[in-house]
Length: 292
Image 1 (cartoon, one colour):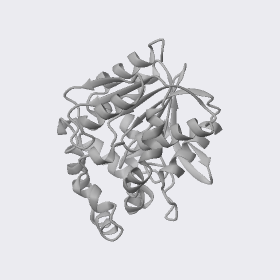
Image 2: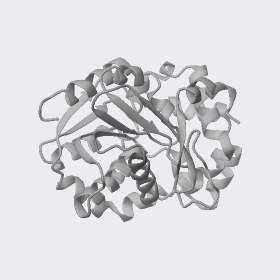
Image 3: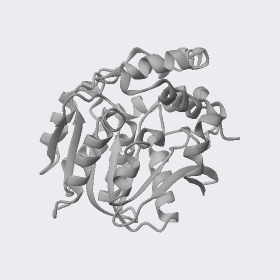
């Protein structure tokens, strides 16, 4: 049953069965396709305010990764970034998407780098025209991880913190990642909390948080794919991010051939939430360039 705060969001989307699991998605607009990959610990709702701005010019597809939002959250799932990449690719194939641009935020940037590594090695079934990377800790050694992130990845303490977490704690921690904490209203927090706790979602956080170990273990594979990337790329960064700090954006800009770096001043870790108009305008301006 869909939680009440999420009814309107759910009614605007639908479910697809992918690898035996129900995956929630929104598919809106017409024109060239833009694929969105959301972050942790939230869901596709991150793009709620920006989605209509993008969909006025593009077909936009965004889904909830397994373990997030309205998608299934099976207790036995590994929640590996490799598996999340496979789910995304299988979903896009089921939707008949053959060509698109890719935009990834936070956790989604690591899903995107695995997709790019597969594209380089074996092909992925969808032709990518361009890439946008937004406020993600791809360079995990440069990230300023929060203490809840560090605890959640611990196999003993993580489950305890997940069980004890509350909406108040969740909202407090999420707001601390923003340049302006008031950008997330109480209603926003209520929706995101409902999405996170749906289907016992908060109990999956320790499993999902193992992606932080994967970022270190597979850094050569994923960073290597970026260093050899042949796509027009925009590194679009909220400069006030206290977690995925500006040094990460600068590193990505220096290592991705021909990448463009654009700062979003006055915005933090969730620029699409804090300044949806500014963020969407920057995305569309990049996609409208002939090289993109």
